[in-house]
Image 1: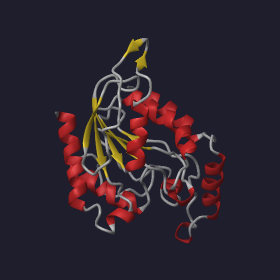
Image 2 (image 1 turned 120 degrees about the horizontal axis):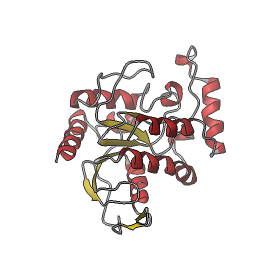
Image 3 (image 1 turned 120 degrees about the vertical axis):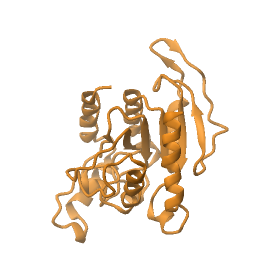
Image 4 (image 1 turned 90 degrees about the vertical axis):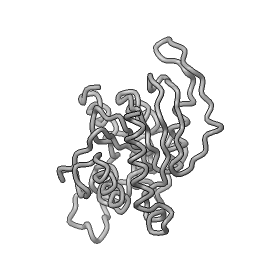
Amino acid sequence: MTPDSLTKLNQEIITCRKCPRLVQWREEVARTKRKAYLDWEYWGKPVPGFGDPQARVLVVGLAPGAHGSNRTGRQFTGDASGGFLFPALCRAGFASRPDATGRADGLILRDMYITASARCAPPANKPAPEELNNCQPYLEREIRLLQPKVIVCLGRVAFERVLKIFSQPPTAHGRQLTAFSPRSMVFAHSAVYDLPSSSFNLHPLSLLCSYHPSQQNTLTGKLTVAMFDEIWKKAKELTNG
């Protein structure tokens, strides 16, 4: 798919104002700022996806951090989660550098596109169900445009959102596709599931689960460097298999 298609989608995402609570919060954070970033001009808008337009691996996170992506304008950029994610992606060959500081830092993703279930920073990092529903069409369109071979879900919210998308009525362009029931699929770190062709992805693909690289998981040892490296090794194996 051409980069222009993703560019058009991202322009729509950036101007979205569907969720009044999130609009108010993201803009309030951008005005008040954090003491450490008083000299920053915060992004303060919905955060689009970014990466390789020919990516075979789509990474889905939760939502922008109030002083991370909501400040820098790029997914997982400028916060502790990104500080754990990008070194792992660099070791695996998906990212050109291990650090992510801002949109102009020169970081390039190879064969990977990173997005999120919610595009605006939510209070307490918890988007409401209706807010996730408002954002879901953007994720659906990213899947349709990219046609990935592997979707890596960082955390349970992303996992459940992807399953919801693929559980929708199986029709595409008048063609009946395989019905799909996710009842047997349970979120667990390193679990892999097969997803059928659908109205969003016209070929079968793999769904790979990982704990989210939040400090709540990384500082407690729930997610270690070795465990995370195995996720990206497995993602490569799935794309090539």
